[in-house]
Image (cartoon, rainbow, N blue to C red; front, side):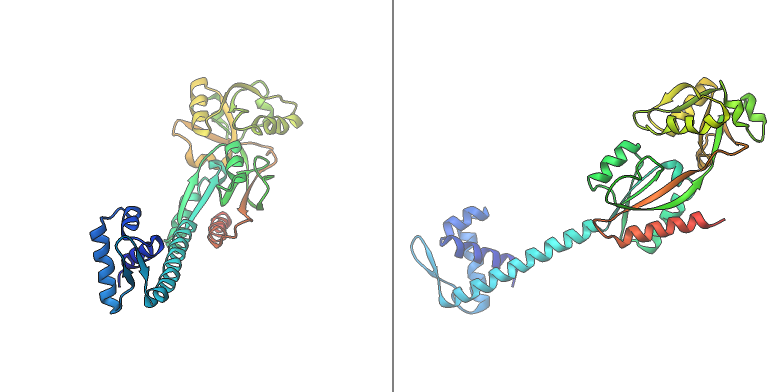
Length: 296
């Protein structure tokens, strides 16, 4: 018995007419009548008493109508469940590149090997956009630097890793000859930073880091698009930039990074998992990320 025969039968019974049912199903009336006849032949009983302009269910048809409706309802529920479960097999991850540099590709590879049925969607977006997506329920996992998005409600947060700050500059920059950079050398040094609109915490955090050394940062440019644009600005202005040491993994060959001595306070990266929708996929993904962080 084909499912379409049940749908055609239920439609005719509901409309009480082959003509009206055929219009709703976008079939010709003879084709619909033929399909219902096939169903009756398969069952071996008549389902309708046919009149000139209308039809009426037989006793057998009445009983079968109830069963057919129940079966179609269960099929519709099963279809919806399958579609919902399929959508649930997507893990949405918002991340800051500096927080995940050096480990994200390897973590993704291991996660896909363990859970090949789960598709990971990555979103490299600015902190304000990440907050918007997180609040609207568009992210399952958020990986970011304090304090940018860690106050976002609805997420369970834990420390992910601690990052040291380094100075980025062109390989021919005068400070590039040094193995370590004293923070006091930054007084008056031209810097390129991340813009306030998309990275509102960057400039205030750099100011706080330099204040104990009696320095005020001198920014010659603030880039809104992110680290890649900042790299271009460092080259163009022959300036320097203060970033997390993990960016060394993605530095262009023309740029170098040097650690500070004494060191600034570390930057804390945190990971958040959406609490309102428990996801074992999210927990597994975060566990794999932390495994790679813990490796020497």
